[in-house]
Picture 1 (cartoon, rainbow, N blue to C red):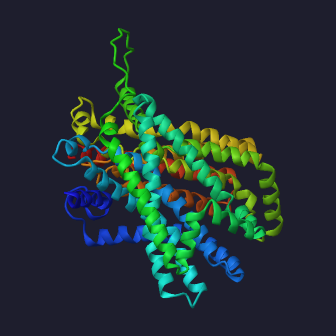
Picture 2 (tube, one colour; picture 1 turned 135 degrees about the horizontal axis):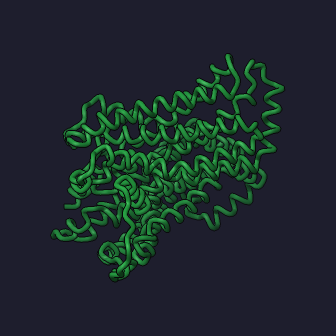
Picture 3 (cartoon, rainbow, N blue to C red; picture 1 turned 90 degrees about the vertical axis):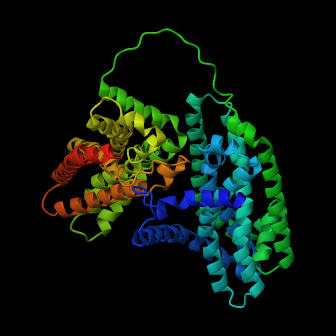
Length: 540
């Protein structure tokens, strides 16, 4: 039974790649190869960031005879990246699948169900851990030509053993989140989850953003860091020694990872049923008579979409983070406005381009806001999220085009205010003229309209209505990735078009032409959604 459940969890992870979600049959080989190539490109793009860190550390410490230290530090990065990739979804993966009641009602031990789900967490963490550890091994093997076979073998094995330790940490964090979540009312649970995740992301990116300062500090005080890792980071000290070919250190770390995982598994197993079936956070509903104001059909449908968005933390985090990131980026630009002004002045004086860089700044600012807002593909998974309740919206006595319009309008309503606030802050920071700032505002508003229609159009691309885990339609669906990448390409096209237009006119007219092109695109996609989209929706 464990083998069957593990196979089920693995298939859930790769379902979007190997299955045609429209027909439910196996996807074509060309489609599978395309998806694998795309993921490989993302893997190499993400992993390339760690080549520089590994090279800097190894070339710094190798001449000092401390070849274990850079591998110990890269192990820390590997654990951090693995946590980043798995911890945000561990709680959902372990405790919130839709088939909880079904599996628990079968003659299957709860520990078996739990272990199979931990395997899914392990695989997700392994994908991220590999992005950091594999570049470290490549740099190490290139730098030390006489590295022993045992060291190379240990290096490969450490990828999997380190991820066991990472999975243990992820599961413990997910368990703590679950203990807290069951005591929080359902209406507030999503907001709390989002807030905790944002704090985690801010802390993570703060560490990444200050990595250069950390590297400089390590360079200045290498002996002190070596002593510290031998002390409080003893387990990473053993990893570093194992990566250089120390068999005993490999055994010590493997035993430590296995022991901590076993303790974690027993701890989670003991409370698994209690957590998955307990909902203490919900209070008993009491009927209170009150008047309800009548609403239009359009407004009621839109509120339904926004309420669902606000009620699912995974949905908010993956398709609504731009609501926070866009104003945050704008505030950073406003704070750094003097530095930006100095930089642009230097570029103006040094460049030989007939179109000064400063002239492009308004469109670059628009593109920056649009890229962040374009990541909020809220409408794309909205059809798949209907899941096994799709019949409810499909049988509503309302025109189909209104049901679809509500999904795109919900995305527009969620994103429009942050987009406007962000571009106004940046316009003030750049000190542009009033008419230029007004044109920048028009471009961002029209792009937000375009993005909502474009994301809705992609919602019809093989929606998976049979999902068991909320991550499948929100995080793992290819149409969500295509929506984000498509919006990014549109933003690049906006900048390229402005660059060409500036050879013939000024920035004001260039911005207006870009806005007009976006508006025409919005109308064309809206027409497709209201005709072809309606037809596709009715046959789902």
